[in-house]
Length: 172
Image (cartoon, rainbow, N blue to C red; front, side):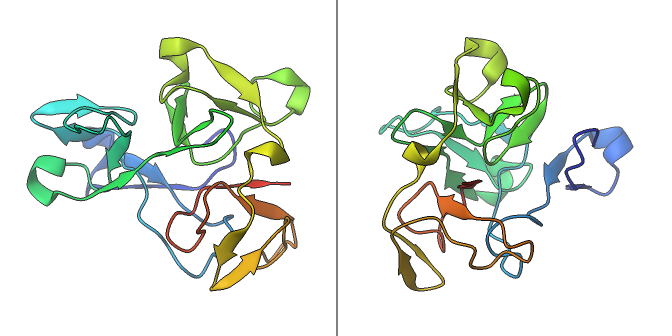
């Protein structure tokens, strides 16, 4: 990817299928891979390229963790932070699991406030007000940003109360 993020095909032939996902190699726990959204995915015969609330009575955003929900029935809920960031969000056809510095505000981290930035063009700058404190990581409770689990010693925080079950995060 031109943004330097690692990705992999989710089918046997990317050139034909164009199905992919980002690899989680820079997250808080590089030894434990949690399911991630796969875009595009099929639900009820329709292709989706971002999180959707379709099919849910509670209107929570979700995505499939395989390329065909109709067959596999595997999903995760997408994260909406208390300040309105939606993760993952799609920007210029790419999925972002955390804030990005690409394309906006002179290198400052930002997030989309809709599942697909292009559909709503709503965004905001990211900062520690998006963090959820306390949060649990590897069974330990954190009340501030931590370096735990990161080989590069970068400080991060969780965007949910449990980083062990939902791995959305941002660098502090």
